[in-house]
Image (cartoon, rainbow, N blue to C red; front, side, top):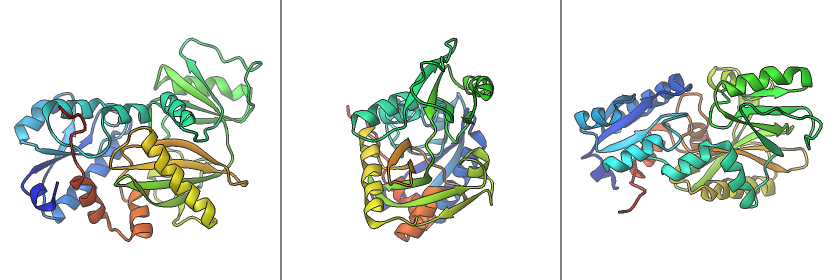
Length: 311
């Protein structure tokens, strides 16, 4: 959609929602809403609940900028509602959103596409983890299969610490992942218009880039661009785009890697609706690597809004 066409539309910024990441989404949505207004768009903030279809109809929303995170927003649920209502929206479609949100299926797709992922196993509620037959060793990473922002994630260094980590992960999901811990640098690649914009390295003050480090000022150092060889940087750009494409993502995303001392690039996940707060990584990558300020980034994203199911 052209800029002139978009300026005739009522844009609903979908934020808040029903997931454990509600507060982060409210911050993302507020920043996006402010940017759209500053650029002269007719935008309204929509706090998403189970009455979303009625609210969208009442507000006369014609285009949706999705600033939701986590379940019911990032997993294809809201995208399906918007498809049914015929409202173009930003970001990936139903299938890509659902795949990216489910870490189990995403890993299977990544591996089938030739991307490197850490060794893992899937554990379902009620099943026991047999350490005797585990094909990798401590430390382990335990995480829910369908939460974002590191919600419910633990690094486990001993058998004694494992039960509490499993219990916490199962609070959020009936299926969880137990992965081999990979020691490496945390590097994220920003994707816009399906192309890699650049990368950023995160050096958290906590043991890993957890919820606190992501959303508390001063809890992580950002290095943008990361200090890498030209060849390794290019590899990350290529693999970031490949990961984005492998799930069928659209528009923009953030692809997270762990890079070891030997240069091995382990793909962690693709975030189809990355944060858009003052501490978020995609806006920082856009500014420092592509020379694009926050308002321009928001405008580029909203102009890519479309329906993905053709009928």
